[in-house]
Image (cartoon, rainbow over the protein chains, first blue to last red):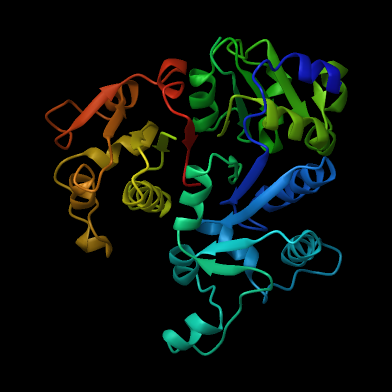
Length: 147
Length: 92
Length: 116
């Protein structure tokens, strides 16, 4: 299979580095699961993932307060374990996150909110992080909702 | 030789973006059906390019793995390789 | 790296379009070339005379009018979708170019994306 796949691509690998952008929310879309399977395969193939960026509804993946039933995959936990094990930086877009009630300690204090719920190792930052991936010519893959 | 574009399509055939994707595909491009997109293999659109594939776990999940030739079925490992080597990737 | 951001969601019914605009303005703010393309029901973002106060939202017309000032290179609208939604050039915001979707269009950009 792989031989045939390589044969059909004549352009050189210009992007050795991946950025994954997840815009589909867990439990509303398949996006976080597909992205995790892809990311695991990429790491296993020796590819570098420079960052995972959560945008729009995708920020819900960074919640530390999701408690799915025990017979369902805990998507936020699986993702966070994968990120920690592979030391991949993960960022939730600040504008998307604040709107949807995803905050870290600093933002919780700033807006005088009663709690913080951003799961480790996710961080909150601006779209500049995504712009950096665009400008640095990372191979950006988007995982949107499928409906 | 222009760079080839790899299109990744995760929407079912009725979805507007499914149509949009098929309109934007050039004959030299590649197309990977994933998630709900794999439902397209039941009745492959005439505008699909020669190089099209569908992701095995999504086909299996939907009971469609036997509907297409093995050479069209790809794994996540294959998808990583395709996305790394394509000139450009568009996720629809 | 030139970017094409496609908006195919209609205005006010979801936040995807706004979040696509944010992406475009961020690229422009960092001097990265960016073009916005409106397809499908997304072309309704470009209709003149929007007033979203009574649905409790801000009209996007002003944001879009400011796009060229912020450095967005072009606002494109899909020909077929404009026809479908009865949008002629006079109904559209100023500065919009109507064009067809196809491989020729997407091949002009290094990076093509949606907000969601």
